[in-house]
Length: 303
Image (cartoon, helix red, strand yellow):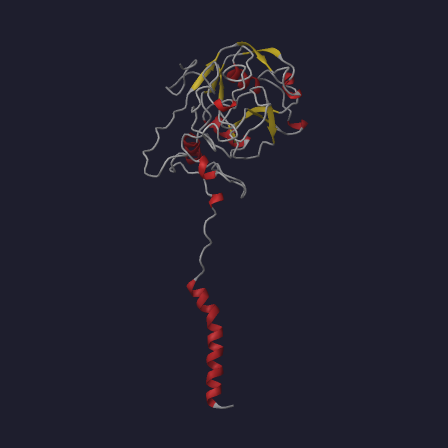
C-alpha cells in the first residue's frame, strides 16, 4: 500500500476513535429542570405578587375554641351520605382558625426532615400558583397532615368537629347562612378573583359563626375519620377504626376547582390516605383540655 494512503487511513481511524473520547472528556449537558416537579419553597412570592414587591406579613397560626353542646349534623336536602339530619352532642374542642399554610408547614419540614409538599408525579399544573407563604399547603397526604398535627401537639379534626366548627349550631348549609352565594368563597372559576388558592382568610363571608375561615372554599380538608357512608356510625370523636371497611379517609369542604350545585358544608368526600393533590389541604384540632401557652391560640369569633 502506498505510504501516503496508509497515513490517510491512519488519520481517519484516529479521528473516528477520538470523537467519543472527546465527548466523554467534555461531559454532557444536564437536561433542563422540569418546572412541574419543582419543590414548594417559601421564598417565592405569593400568587399575584411580583419579585420586587415587599413580602407579605406572615399570617400566624391561631386556634378557636368551639364550646361543648349540640349542633345539627347532616342534612335531609343532600345526598345519601349526608343523611340523616340529626342533633349531635360534642365536647368542647379547639380548631385552627385557618388552613395550615406553606410557611408553617415548611417549618415542620425543616425541623423534622419530613418530605416536602409536592406532586408525586408530573401532573402538577399550577404548582407555581400554590407556593405563597400564606396560601394553604397542598400536596399533603393524610399521613403528612397527621404527622404535622402531632408535631404541633394537636390532631386532625373529627368529621363532626369539623362540621360544627364550620356550620355553627343553627343548621345552616353555608358559612354565611342558607343562600348558596358560591362566589363568596374560593371555588371553581375565575369569578371569585383567583385561579388557584388564595391566602387564608381572604374571603370574609367564608367564615363560620365561630370565626373559622375557609371551610367552604380554597382546599378540601382531611378529617381524622375513616370514611363511612353514613356519619351516624361515627359522629362521636371516639369512633371505632373502620380501616378494614375500605381504607378511605374522609375529606370535608370544597376547593378552588370545585363546581356543582351540591356544594355545601354538609357535603362529604373520601380518598385513600396516601393520596396527594393540589386540591387537598388540612387544619388541626385539639381537645378542650389543651391550654393556651402562647398568643397563637385564641377563643371565639373575630369581628
